Length: 423
Image (cartoon, rainbow, N blue to C red; front, side):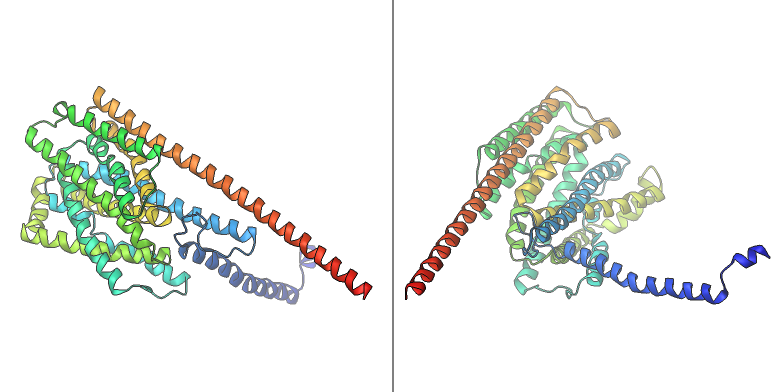
């Protein structure tokens, strides 16, 4: 009885429940609107190379929020690039190590995951008012298809090289694409040449030469020297084509409005690359070869085979989407630098996971890659400091001009008052 006496009346409990429900109904839309607004700003972030995205500059706080959205999107894309690059390289080598030998299959998995891009596209549609494929002109569509076909060729060259070379060697050779990217960026997007850039080019080129000189001691068992060099130069060709791809995409992205459009362009390019790989597989009997390979050739069984293929599809999409996002949000050269930074991780992964040989020449080559990369990062740091200094000087000059104008205005008003008083 005492307990029941302490309980509030049923009517009071019912009123409290209604109040809580009403409060939840009032605050939930507000929270949903806030989340929707944040996601929309991240998705619709533009490729402002200054690093803040296209946001209102009415106040310092709004500018700071815009920079945060930009950094969130940049971090997501680099994480996709990191996971995709390391995982796809190791999984591709895993496929070939366990008697998987179809280069068309290896080529096909690099682009066949394009349906995965439909998920972020639908996500963008939900959280923004932008219509799908807004801003797509016939020119952009044709360029996307053409670049997608070239990516299909690049994927085949990469698969050819990766089937012959150890992961560590393959990664170090691909690291030279940064030097190629600098040259193509200078021609296509008028990239400024600085001493750190030139130093990076020379060091990475020397690294590639040293790696080639030590190639005779880095062949898998049963691989001829001719096939080894065929894989080596196929990888170099893939690096050259990808170095051309990066600045070309930067040039195209200058006319792209937002990140959502970048994903849509990537979808079109991957469809074109998949079509090319599918035609090649069909003409070369690749699909029947895939079935036979899973049942009779792959030494871990069909289940492991299809899991390897499936995970390869996912990781390659992460890699390419992360690369496209980095180029859009920064520059083609910075995107190449970020990819080069992951080459050391790929080298360590090849040595730790597969036991690839890591002799003295390859160690020297790795150190030269690190040296070239660090010199470029130092150059970026110095440029940022110089730009910040110029910006501060500009702000100081603007404040000084405003003060002078205000003083002149006050002086004119005083003279006007004197003249009026005398009159």
